[in-house]
Image: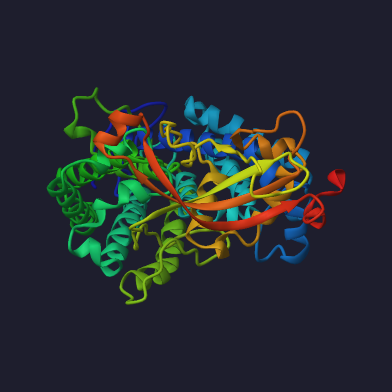
Length: 495
């Protein structure tokens, strides 16, 4: 990156090593995409928190803050928690990020624009640090790390800071290279290029095109896997090379992420990565209007960006060491502020897909002849004939955790029994997380869970039955339980 003189606006222009006005368009696109992701995250939180972590939720925040000190989970909710306060935090974050999406930061002085970016970061950090297993996803830390860097990128009053734009590339490098290494070191199928024989079918939440991706010819699946290695293990180094190589690297990463958007549901992970990739694009190589004039940032701003760079360099020791470790970890935070994290995805790819299917009955006694009715989920596979839906970047947290629960009951230990308990009382907030409640009038008398083996239907099966999935029962996952069995797990209002 280098400084390109820009026309004067509102005062004398001072262009030096600190400024990179050629990245004005990259910064603008990055900031608006990030604001859109932030907005999605806050709206997701406000729609789901009552059932998941609310006062009467499966993993209540008050119980968490009572046993975990503020130094281990810093945020606003150690000062005070109520469902009303949590909703206020979510709606405040949504309003601020909607303003950022509309470009409100460019209408403010530099210091106020930085504050406008800092407040959503503090609010979302407060949510993640009390979110427990519902917020233990790598893209939560990625959003926080990206959001923290965004505070220091300036607005239309100033040229993009060289150091700030390099920090975005360093973050993108760790996201992509970390994901590439974890695959290469992990499952053998990545090295023999066969992982895509299974991945489109066994990924956490297939989308409407996943069935078609799964049925691509196997040679194309091998091309997919090989291309993934190139983009994640080689292309990221191009981010640090002169233009236009860095722009080409960003474009290749963006194209790969769009492929992932089409083939599955990964919440906002892909869109955040796209925002970071587009920050590497030099506007001089695009058919765009001339760069607007920018003043150089004030000295206090330059000092803050330099201090940020020193901080990130120091904190990078742990994730950099992790990258080159034989025992590489993925999606690891090294501090409670979720700054400079380790990233990665799908080091292991499942060969079989299992799903936990929840069923209820309103009969007073369970017998071999009992009729069971199935609960429907919004995103995860349930009914074989239902078309998979596209939800990303919206994040269906319960559906994702149900995928983990099917892999091993240990993943469901903290919350699954509480979830079932709430189904037995038709808890309104919990049912709002589901697509279909088979007991709209009165709650069921018993609920059970069964484990099924799911696979995509073949072309011929699809033509014959209209189904997207074929499923076969494997075993019981949870024996039939009644309200009496789980009464101790219910909030007082349901006892």
